[in-house]
Image (cartoon, rainbow, N blue to C red; front, side, top):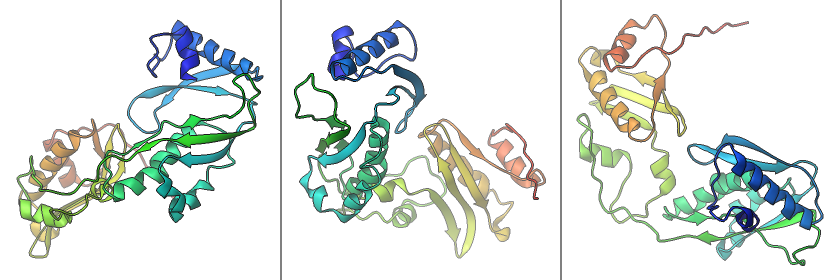
Length: 284
């Protein structure tokens, strides 16, 4: 498909603007490609949120084509003997053909397999349709999909350096995250580190968890300080450092607070957080 678009748009590099004549030209190029394959159906397009990263993408679709994913073949032969991967294949094989569906499958089911083995920069895809018929033949209803995979190198933990933190010692942080020099860098373990705890002599000076994390924002929940440690500045110090660290990775940090929790509201306002909405829960 990229080659077909590039015939009409020589500058095409895999990206398109959200609107304008260029989009219609690309749509016409895709339609012409489908006609060559005996599939004369209108091509629709819309801007949708990128399923795997920040920003938007231009999504092209054809209604009524009846194309289904026949198989997913990976260039990494080791996946053929991976029980978890083979089990998850049943979730996508036989479903309507969609690049978005395939990309989500690679991100949600395949990427964790490589991250856990230390392949932190494994490149999955882009998926390719490989047909054996002549170029002008009618598209088969069952579409075989090939996924090239470049695993890259296995990463190991060497050492950890912490910055932007004035609350918890580097030794405590390293121990908490289970980082051992020389061990394989488990990418899933790195990504799932979404709980923060500051505890001294069995007393929780600060605790918080990320309940939702997107490219646009992170939402904190279960912010807590044990009663004996309250009103000593621990929450202010810890939350200020935590928010600063989070804002290096996402543009917005949010949380919910009860309107009668004046102490918490005072803390958040002191950190320059602002009220954006009010809501009420109604139990029926």
